[in-house]
View 1 (spheres, helix red, strand yellow):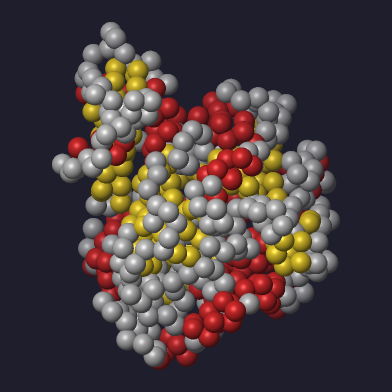
View 2: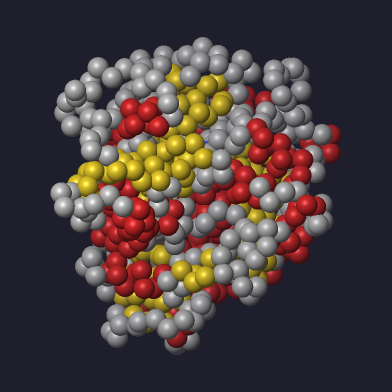
Length: 629
Ligand code: WT7
């Protein structure tokens, strides 16, 4: 490293650099900066295309950028089929452990076979290219198979995280107009069964598009099977139509691969759309360089397939790279706080990628739980979802990584599809900073007018160049795509985060500047929580904010105005918490509910959450000139 960096810096060891694929980040970055399109097309050349592209980037209709136009491919071909002709055919694609101790492994050959069989099942139900299929399951191998099978036949998957509940599922099915729902009977979580099928049945009463429900048996408890609508996955997979081979749909590079709902500033969650071609190139490249997966590695991304982290870096990224991926169904501390460390030792995991909230949660139990296990297989660690506080970073580095594993703190979003600010193993680290943008991507911190701010000054985080895995649109709502991301500063993508850049060009994320709350790394909108609250008969009005929480990062605080005739009581508080949990999901359950007689609003009637937050924290609310009364 030529330059001395300021602050607390962790330089990579000789050993780390020698083993790393990229030994000189500056060189790679310099090349990508000079010729970003060449950088991306070189990467694309490493993948299979039925027909090569005419153009790497088509920016003739900004901000509706298109990548690898004219090319024909299917991401699933690159995830599975290409490996069957190589030594990877019998390599493990997936190692799975259930919370109750069940386990399964699947080679590339087996995952290809199961995917083909299920793709044939879906085709036999009439699913065609462009149709939407909703998937609602826990962390079991079938969620991977369902996603790949859907994409193989050119349909669009919409995975709804298994921690969401009735209303969240219903509105996502309704918005996507899915005709098929793939669900599990239940999921094990902290020793209990989450009643996924029961929740789905209730959701289906609220929306009317689904014709077929395909049910995976995981927990085996008694469930309702509606005749004519519900069918067992394992029975379908035994029918003659579930052939081992299935012709793959050749897709245009820009054809949709999936939609994934995420919370925004206002209103309902929006469906972020990603495509086969550019998304594939973006996540293949970023995973290859950042987690630097070697052929013999075992890689574990502990996220859920139901979020973008799982889509990109549990399912598609590792398979594109021919990696062996580990998937674990349950809670990190079940039955004891050593569960994760036990599995790392048992399976010889080399790379662990998780969220700050999980690290803080496990940190609380003390390092003795970690130290009972031999974690010497670990080579790299990762963090994602929210800023990691330096204290948690140091614990992760020292106790889990034994001071030899660099931590890849990756900043990105559902919308970016891929890592955007991230180190690579050879990059000097500063605890709490994701270092610099990935090669080929230009980002900055700007003021209200869109001008770059000085070093260590706070501003809005923006992206200044298009990138292959970028969001293409909000499904069925292109105006929202333009307004939300591209209207504040023309030509720049607005991330919704505030950040600082230090004198070394390292980025430091501060947090969201909109009405999105990050709870345990999960992205929730104040609007979703508030609308769940007002759907309860006792509630006239509600406001939700996020306040700092030691383990969760942020916790939800809700302020509620009761309707006439309802009495304030602790029982009602519990009932309202339960109601939000039932409608949106346990992750959205408010930590604290307070009854109030009025809410701070602007003269046009918008709730000023900023004022509520300042008051709760005992801070100065700042400019309140627009406050009514
Ligand atoms: C928001 C996006 C992308 C995977 C998971 C989240 C926050 C994400 C980091 C990080 C600081 C981070 C941002 C971002 N965020 N990663 N490494 N450091 N903040 O995806 O649910 O779309 O949320 O998560 O606020 O905008 P998401």
